[in-house]
Length: 87
Image (cartoon, rainbow, N blue to C red; front, side, top):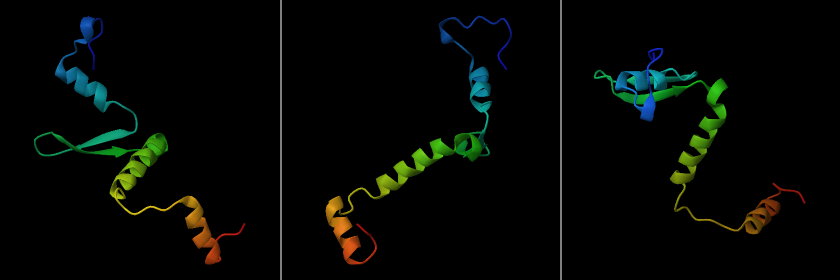
């Protein structure tokens, strides 16, 4: 916890206080290894669900990088031909 009355000029906060401030974010928990290094994070999806969706979407998009693409009109035409899309 930040010491009451402590002067924080120039944004200087010692390492322990910075760590506390980061760890105190509601809905976020860090998983640490035996040496105390952060190796994973757990997000409360009720608090951070939209953020997680954005992160997940970016991961999926990166994984699809380099896959073949097609124009939307062509894709819609294929769906119509297969009876999967109505006008």
